[in-house]
Image 1 (cartoon, rainbow, N blue to C red):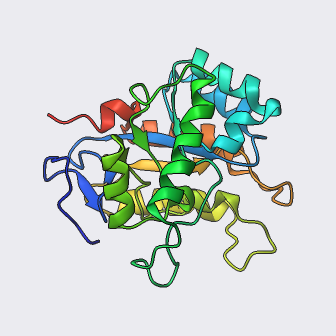
Image 2: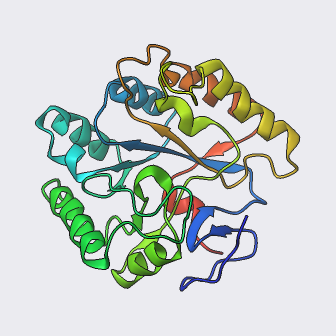
Length: 247
């Protein structure tokens, strides 16, 4: 993994990649559940109920499109009521840089900033301000150092999921060549935890709050099983602000 120096300094036990903070303290046996949303929210009630049952605070990053969708209004209000972190994921889920040439930007600074401002404008309708939501998770979880610098210049901190598992593949459908079943995703998380000396310590474990109807094998239906298994392995589930807090 490429480590870089960026404008916010964290201890060496934290991990950065291309200017974004991607993992909290790798010496502490704790992790944060992160959910993103753009078009779908079918898992929201299931996820909310499970988090409430186990008194877990998670982080939800939604696009402006999600925030302005009237069908998702109650979903957002419920998550705010439960005390979860709600943040920005861009307004229109833009692809910032080329998949094959990461240094090649596909957006200008003006396009990036305008889209991000629109995201926060929609969030403000729910009473969420930049001060309350200083962390920004890029769309597609794909970005480069330019995006990290632009995010910082706007007064936000760029973060991303921790790589190593297939948790983020819960959006794939059988029609995709990269389709992964919930069983494969679940096993990948536990396999990584068991094979690495620091396990899932400091992980930002990313999933989706909803997926395409063509995916019938919904991973959020295994969320409770995953939580119980990781708890049995002595992991603590903490909020985003806690896992990214510096000593």
